[in-house]
Amino acid sequence: MLPGIICSAVIIGVLIYFIDWNVLKDALKNCSPRLFLVLFVLQTISFFFRGMAWRVILNDEPSRLNCFFTITEGYLLNLLPLRLGEIGRSVIMGGLIGRSPFYVFTTVILERIFDVLITLIMLVITIPLMASVSFSGTIYYVLFAVILAGIAFMFWMAAHQVQFMDLLRKIIKPETKVGKFVLPKVEFLLSGMGILTQPKRFLVWLFWILATWACWITTLQVAMHDFFPQLPFWAGLFIQGIGALGGAIPSAPAGIGVVEGAYVVSLGFFGIDQSSALAFGLVMHAIAIVTPVLWGLIGFSVQGLKLGEVFTSTMNKDITAEQGDESH
Image: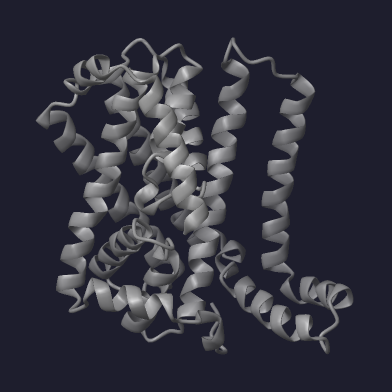
């Protein structure tokens, strides 16, 4: 936790040094109760869409309501120290559908891989549009080729799991300690990619993943229209991408400071002053905290769980020790 706290503290210190409090106060006036309510509704819909995607990859075993609440509970746990959201929701969902947490975790990993791919695609598309950035056409095509190659490799691994594991066993000897630890887990992780070999189910799953991102992008565009109506639509895609990458940086609980800093940096490319950008970042971060906290707490109550107990059990749980013979 210490590196994250230090990182957040440094960024918060820099932001405080550069901002103009009067400009910040005036910019925050753009956040009317109506705007906050609209953003809250859009974020809620995005959680429902993500839950629908998760339900598809889990073979429709959990109910839609359990998927929605467990998704929000995971995001709530991500706001706490150690960022246990992905593991936490895997443990919760595993208990709800009678599956091992590690099996559920493999489906979460695939979801996150596509989140990263979508983020990279948005950045690759928008960076060349920025007049202030010198961007080589060759680099542009190379990056796109790398992304496409990565996607193709994932589909190949899913369709040829036996061949991939045979290749991996030549690199990592099964009889070694590393082999005994790594190989079974890689093999089990590949089971979470089974949906890639089922075109119809994959397209349904991808539809809900893209619908989730459409909601997130719409949320940012709506807020951006109130704060910075002069910015083009594609600027929102760039800001969304930088914000997503910023959220992955080590930080204090809830990403305090780091998330706001990512918005300040990304908006700075479009000539937005630090104080106005910070106001926008505070609003976006606030809605990203309030929504999962509210629905997550409701979810814990509905499912008969306690946040403290789930956090403690998740922190002390080794989900890789609970592998089974489950597969898609």
